[in-house]
Amino acid sequence: RKWPEQSEELLGLIVNSLRALDGAVPHGCPEPRRRPQSAQKIAVILDRAPKHLKPDLVALVPKLVDYSEHPLAAYALLDRIQKPDAEPSLRLP
Image 1 (tube, rainbow, N blue to C red):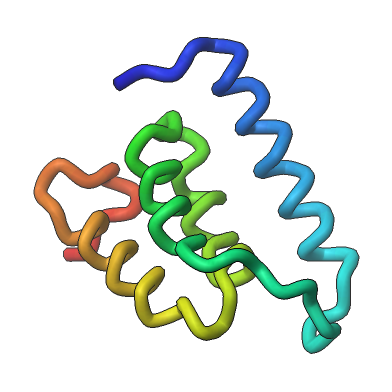
Image 2 (tube, one colour):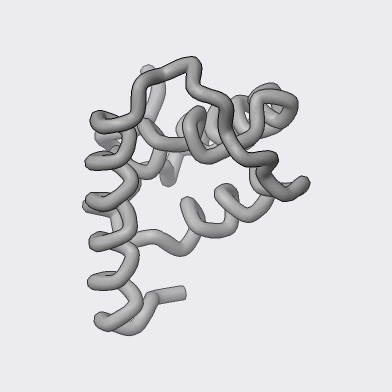
């Protein structure tokens, strides 16, 4: 499924904003409690995101997912990057 061009542009802006925030916020700060199932939501985004944004999204996943959901997010990421049709820049050898 392809996203409309406006959605791709918006997702790009969101990714860039998250990267900027990641650099500006000291790690170890208390974070607001994230909603459950964030790992599943990120999996959907990774499935539909434009290829050129996927490396940035993958790098941001640990910061976007609640610590308690890190194992689920890691499993979802590994599942995607081990597939033969995975984005070549993300694929595991």
